[in-house]
Length: 329
Image 1 (cartoon, rainbow, N blue to C red):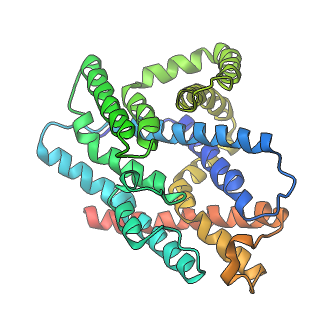
Image 2 (image 1 turned 90 degrees about the horizontal axis):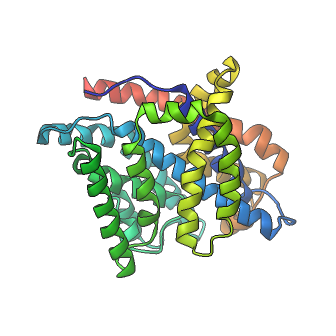
């Protein structure tokens, strides 16, 4: 059985994270930003790493509520995960692959790369496809999840999670996998280890978090080792986003909008590039063969295209959920 209780705080957190990815970080690929400084790009990279870590944490946090006692439980988990996102993921990745190939710049390095991404194996076969590598990595984590849920006590969980992280690190050092799994798995495991009570404690210490975390975040920017710094950014971003979202949750309008964006967030991630590409093509009809240089005005992207992405994603999710509901019942 799964506990259906959901904290609105994480819906707002998810909304903030997806708006950063879709409305800021990936938006820069489709608008003219000639004067962007290296400092901005560096800061953006740090924030994006932190945001992806928060996404990964939330995945583990909500999936820990599944109970694994038998093989049937594991198979049911796989079935629900498969129905939840795989068909949408396939539709998104296949369509953008074909469209980009027609434009002379295939999104995946090869047909084999595309197939492997559908199996959650992209991290084993670089180069990783832009955007879709993250979903492929999560698929690999989902495959491990029934095993990760077997220990009942926190001590047993910690031992297992540290062991998995050690294996991923060894595989990375051996050149077998890319470093993404090693970097983001700790956040997935941390999400599984974090209880609702732990989240409440963070909210109760809002002032301390608001003061200490930004200071630690700034200090982490001085860390010389990229992987250690990346882990610090992810760890520090979660409590900061939790208290910010908890503060925003006191506003009814923010809650209403946050719920809608959170609901649409998966499809926003999967299909935002489609709508961006379509938009720049409409504005630059001669750029089919040179799509990477086609851009649109920033005001149009922010005021029109990003809202279109959100609305489209919301109603696509509504339609898809109806299909999934019929399939499960």
